[in-house]
Amino acid sequence: MKKALSIDIGGTKIYAAYVNEAGEIVSDIEKHATPKTSEEIIEKLKEIIANHEKEVEFSAISTAGGVNKENTKVICSTANLPFGYPKTDFSALSNKPVFVENDANCAAWAEYKIGSAKGYDNNITLTLGTGVGGGIIVDGKLLKGKSGVAGEMHFKMSMDKKRHCSCGAYDCFEIYASGNGLRITGIELTGNKDITTYDIIEGVDKGDSTMLRVYNIWQNYIIAGLIGLADIFDPDCIVLSGSMGKFCDVEYMQELVNDEIVTLPTKILHATSGNYAGMIGAALLGFEKFSQACSK
Amino acid sequence: MKKALSIDIGGTKIYAAYVNEAGEIVSDIEKHATPKTSEEIIEKLKEIIANHEKEVEFSAISTAGGVNKENTKVICSTANLPFGYPKTDFSALSNKPVFVENDANCAAWAEYKIGSAKGYDNNITLTLGTGVGGGIIVDGKLLKGKSGVAGEMHFKMSMDKKRHCSCGAYDCFEIYASGNGLRITGIELTGNKDITTYDIIEGVDKGDSTMLRVYNIWQNYIIAGLIGLADIFDPDCIVLSGSMGKFCDVEYMQELVNDEIVTLPTKILHATSGNYAGMIGAALLGFEKFSQACSK
Image (cartoon, rainbow over all chains, first blue to last red; front, side, top):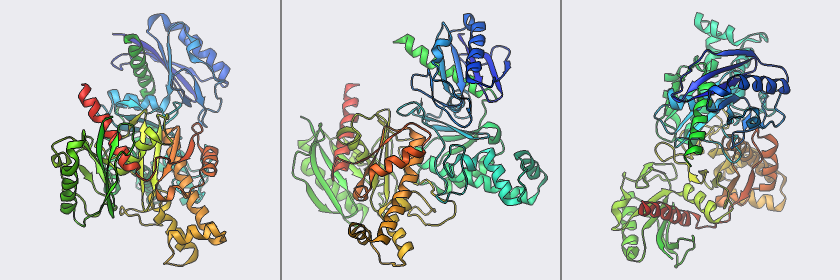
């Protein structure tokens, strides 16, 4: 079976492995520390690709930031990508094809192809971590918009300028639904500025009533956002992924979402494609693109 | 040139006319009072269709409510369609094909094919009237979702249960951005429960400072919603249609939207396909569907 070199650029680690057309990781996973500057990251990518490109059909890269429709450049940077990229054309990093896509889009594609959204042609995956990433599948295709950067979860939950979001604006879904949002809710309810998401989750596990309130408020924020997305997209399902996704009570969420939407009932599901969803999704999207290119 | 019989079912009037493949109305426009019950509406539609079907390729119907993916039935009713339809299969109303679509989707398609969004394959049209309708075009196709009813603009603008929306939930975009939303803002600022949208618009025209405040708050609500839609869809443009759309200061809105979004700049535009956009869009969507069916 054909395989790709797939690389996931995270804030602290870069992962690399071979992924086959079935979305299986078929090698050990290399782990590198993420360098501090964009130039060093690019050098590191070149080095990783040079070591492996002979073995694979192409290289696939999952990264923070908005990627163009041609899947060659990061054209929007985000707070999660403070280093930025100097508009690097990633296809110049290899003698073979290189495919780049936003990490949340890659995670969504992995859920669609081998995870919870498999078989559902209209679905949304939200990656709830420090921030919130979104990947949207419409009729079996990744929603990219006019320039490639669709799926940003910066819609407003309030017009009262309550919370400052990482994007610079106020009251985006991200600053309520993310791990950071949970932490801020914790601070608001306890006054403890040093509280962490771990403290809150631990408190919930122990049945602490204040921590349970924090957690419930956080969940209700997510539910409020899911209602909007379900009304806008009428999706088969919405998958909750990322480090915070696993803490969501998806059955409760599904019930409340379906109680309020004006569209037809949807499913709220946990992600199942695992910790390397970004790497898997990038490779599978790459196969999709380059196979199409060949068959033309 | 081929033509369709196109029918627009409104709350008070039913319009019917011939529309050709270029989206031109090529006959007089018949006007009928909208009957009070769904049974009577169906009878009226049968009568209109029977009078004209020999002259046309098919009949197209633009209606409130969510329409299935097969464009044969209204499967979700809305507050704007209090009478409902008894799950009627519209294709049974004629000996020739019948195409049904949601009115806001029809208006969006008209904008895309002959209006402001022409040439833009990723766009959104919001029909701002008593309520708010949405029609979304993704890569040149109407966004329908899993069951056909996508594009509902019932995402939340607040989590504080401030305004009760027509859908039964609280604080949907519709109850802020619609004409009804403008009226409620007027009541909130003046205490006058009898104030109308006409009073407010007239006050704005006369330079009344309170009415200007009401209007500005209403515009800012719309801007807040547009920011979310632009971040989610990365659209080429968002078109503001409907009886309230013409009151929007689209240049001001575009500036503020582009200041806040994390995606690439979009355009905010007035609709240009006119008062019969629903009828035109229904016919053009019908030509799209039935031409495809024939070429298979």
